[in-house]
Length: 213
Image (spheres, rainbow, N blue to C red):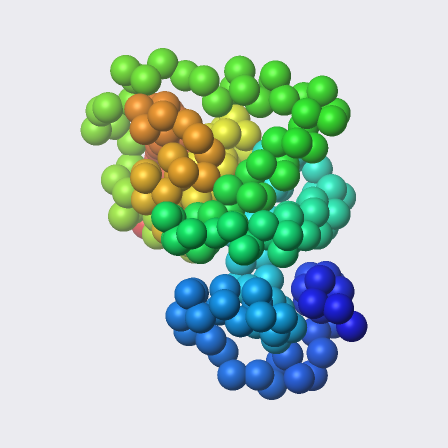
């Protein structure tokens, strides 16, 4: 099986036994070198490590679960083809997430939905620098626990859901989100602020009902 075929098999949950048994490569630089040198287990490890975050990025952008698997394959095909160009100017996970973001954006472009996404992500940068809404620790804990926030998350715009997920669930800082999405820092803060206000309403409602805290 080819190196790319190994990665696609990993996405489908059918990794080869030698890949599953291989020692985990802890260092990103060593992992990249191993993949470029042709290591199938190393590429399978990369896919396994980053497919959840990439699926999050793609799913929040395209809003169609049936498309996520195909776009994940497109993402890791692009990673495979472009990895030799990676220069560690960002973290490996940020770079791969950017590839996922670009893949999803290209999909929206093919479906003539890119303009709708671009309008949704552009919000005034001077908004959202307040203290309203749950604090980062409180919101992060609630999101991680899955506490009745499914409906609240669905009320957010797709860009807000993407940014909230990257920041609170995937632990991306603002600089990393900026690198992944290409959005200005103030725009990212505005999306986070608006999202926190909406989620506060849901947290408060369930807390009053005795479902939280």
